[in-house]
Length: 257
Image 1: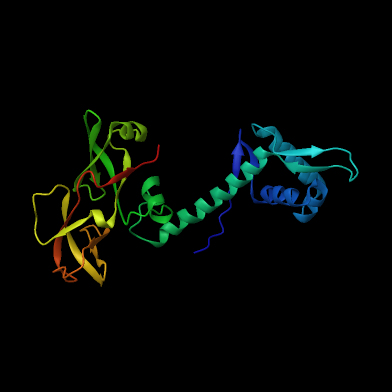
Image 2: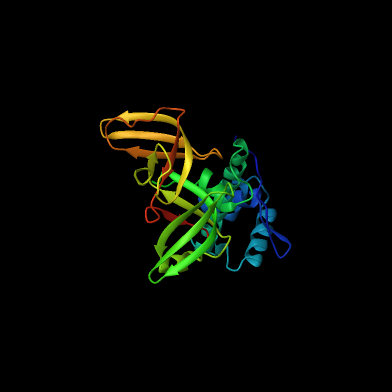
């Protein structure tokens, strides 16, 4: 759903940027002139100049720079900082729209920035993305074992990473993380085994192929998982209960710092 969401930014309790001022900046960038830019943005020259003066005063750096004199009578252009500010505003507009799109899916979290971003925006080659929080961090020399409590608040999985990665990700207790597992790293069993990181699933679909079979599964909380198995009869059928597992070393962690 395309929503009409207006982004307004205030600095020091004063208006800094809104859709009309952004249209003016785009017009100035396009025409190289405040006069022509104001005309293109359908506002008066005085309103345009007041807006530019206010933005230049409020910002840490100059947004619009005037060029006096010259054969063409001078002009104006956005500074590097101004263009970056314009790009940031446009990026924030996209984020607003993406965030509004989350409303369309009941299962997407609205109380976690990482959880929401991972669903409506983040795309990785790892088919399986499990959202959770850090429950424990155990260091054993160069390696660390990170215990993650998944979103169902019941299932715990362990991921092995280097100590350097743990420090870089700043993995403190209760920090939100994503556990990323490639489809070929996920194992599927008919019954529980002695392997680590295993949880019950329900087979939802099986797609056989010459290079192997793709198995789609669901956790009890509705999370979807995907695994690939070698060629041959998988021995599984849609609707069947099974168990999925992965090795602690066969997973990646992602977080927002």
